[in-house]
Image (cartoon, rainbow, N blue to C red; front, top):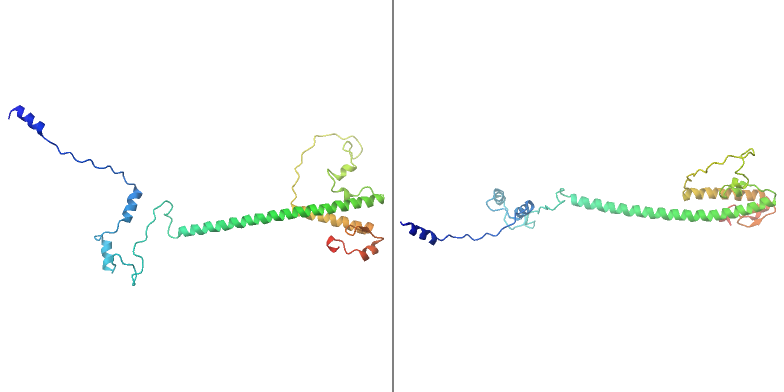
Length: 241
């Protein structure tokens, strides 16, 4: 064959062009797993054949009456699901318990706050009575010629001793050396403890007024003597009046 004929045959040849296949995105491991779990077991599977021999009929529910489940129990492969059977319900119970504990803790905090406010109110109320009793005691003491009594000096601020103490002199009357004041950290007294302290001071000064001056703060009256006080005063405390 002449070279020109070979060239013509080559140019006349046709080639089959394969159609372009659509590109598919690679499936993830979880996608392949979900796809495999969603695919029914084929009839050629040995396990499926064994179930058929045991009396299983495809599409029929389990049990003697056929009222049981028809589909296998689905396997949850979502994140956080691989935690064992019953663990989700356990986690829900734990969350509910924590919620109840948080509610109880808040309720206890609210009760403690209300208790603290109640104690603070009681402290202010008793402190008012104590201040009144101290004024009366001071007046009666000064009328009797007593100008220093720690019962009505004790709660004055800064210190009751400042009323008769010269900071520029020491205990022997000599000039004292002045130093820079030292900042002291004062202890914060809880309201309940402060209430007990103030009530004790009030009871003490009330007893002093009754014994020394036959005076009752709640009666607002100075009796002739102790016998007259015992005969006409209902008692030491405000609740008695």
